[in-house]
Length: 378
Image 1 (cartoon, helix red, strand yellow):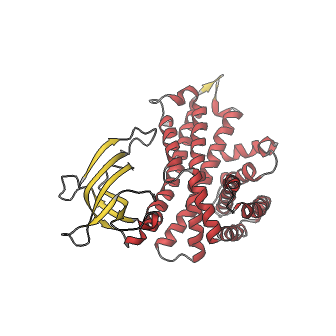
Image 2 (spheres, rainbow, N blue to C red):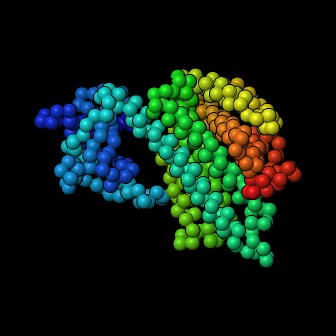
Image 3 (cartoon, rainbow, N blue to C red):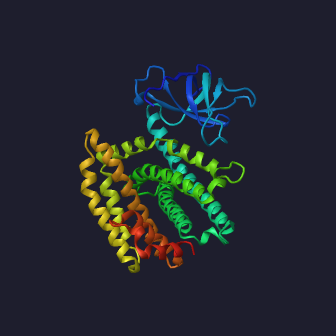
């Protein structure tokens, strides 16, 4: 973003308006009525410090484009319902969003963070639709005289899909709560810092998981899972891959979390929050809570060690951040399963998730795993 070459000149006739000129190589939704974009005001310094954030309407008079033309539409792998394009702006009228010298911060906090939260919501939707398609198919598809949902291998695939979907929903709802607190201006300093961590870490993990879940769903459908007019799974698979890169690739997001942890001390805030939430989990999940705490305590020193300036530590941090986010998801699932209105399936999902991601042994090879599979699907 710091290499932005789009410029903004103050309009001499319309108070408060600016004229935006330059190329935008990627406009996510070119048929939108409003564009939020960054540009460099005339005389502003280079890099991200010199960027301002502008709101540019599609039209001024309701008919003619507001000083821009579409160079070409992007031929994207997925999310094809959104017309993404390359645009050339030529004196388009725009109005600043906030102060001119706070454009980059506004773009990140108001635009990117909102998009990353919504990206995670979209990933949970992809997982949910995939599970519905795969489980419905498995209930009706017959092989060797029985429906395939009676085969252990298929049941395990469906169970893992449901477990991962529930975990993504749980962590994204925790993030949604923080978004609401911030919007209401009632969030504590710790909640603001926790949001800063989770909005990036959660987008990273849920988008990766969505692709895996759709892949599993396609496997359940077999050859039918690859047929475009048989089910939405091919489209969902393409969309999930786009979601992985949308609003920040995995390495970009992990690098941002790493910088924030070094600069703002986020790890301490996250660890304190996890411990607080685990303390509220019902006693019936004592073994799962102990596993989650053990994983957290093992991660702490390793994470702190990787928050330095060496390039080697960056790769290690990504792997450890993945596991820390899994601890967060486990915590959210256990808290939800502790609610008086939760079901046996909720409890099984929480315990199975802890076993799959936080166990030091081969949990999925233990006899108890197959009991969890039946309860998860009940």
